[in-house]
Amino acid sequence: MGTSLLLIGKPHSSKTVFLSQFYSKLLKNKGKLKLYKPVDDLSPISGAKEALASGDEPQTTPSEKSVKFYLPIQVAEKQVDLKCPEYGGEQVSNIVENRELNKEWTSSIKESDNWILFIRLNNVNKPLDISDVTFSVQHQKSPKETISETEYKISDQSFFIELLQILLHAKGTDYHKLNDKPKLTIALTCWDEMNTEEKPYDVLKSKLPLLLNFLESNWEESCLNIVGLSAQGFSLTLPENKEKYQIEGPEEFGYLVLPDGTQTDDITELIEQALL
Ligand SMILES: Nc1nc2c(ncn2[C@@H]2O[C@H](COP(=O)(O)OP(=O)(O)OP(=O)(O)O)[C@@H](O)[C@H]2O)c(=O)[nH]1
Ligand SMILES: [Mg+2]
Image (cartoon, rainbow, N blue to C red; front, side, top):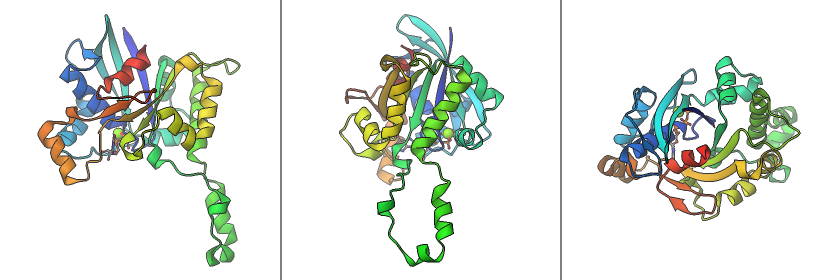
């Protein structure tokens, strides 16, 4: 059975690291999901896998790159041939900027009933609060410039809402009803950067309340899942962290924070939950 998973994320949201770590954990055979046969083509993640094995951060995926990574997965009694896209996150930024989907995106959206949206909260911009702006001589000199800088920039919160609306429109969902298809998982990525003990739902509520509101007004509760994900486990910029990767192997790291706040090393559960 072929199942398409649509992994959606802006640049640097951990898509490539996740795919590489997901594959490494599948190979380890300790998680809920397993491979039922070897993967034919590892080229979509081979660069990232090599980099991580040496304790280096993977390179940004080029904007024009768009390939599919096929994984033959055993989910309980079922065999699922999973198809995950690996692409440069710039494509997602361009969708909102140009309000346009190319043929490939349109068909990926149509064929997938399992969407996972990666949001790296640490990279999300804070909405402009006029009370935070300190009046300066620069404001006095060029008021027009200051307005144009802030006026036309869409906030990250609005970005995600716009994006989902564009995707839902292409999917042809009925906006009078709550969505049960596609099932949506929000993965708050690079969770380690947040330094929080809170549940993913509460973190999303405090950081992006409008987005949460949009999600809850448009999805059936049972078809909306909010989790935390640290596919890498920690930053690889520190030499001691690089060493951990070189000595123990990348597959030993990375974790998922489930909706109830519990942490598990088995990041394959992210995909298992999306497929349930
Ligand atoms: N601290 C931390 N850093 C991470 C994590 N996952 C990824 N990173 C780092 O974040 C950066 C971006 O990760 P990628 O996986 O390349 O992100 P991407 O979504 O594939 O980005 P594009 O290819 O540009 O679309 C890299 O420098 C990673 O090493 C994580 O869980 N924690
Ligand atoms: Mg990438």
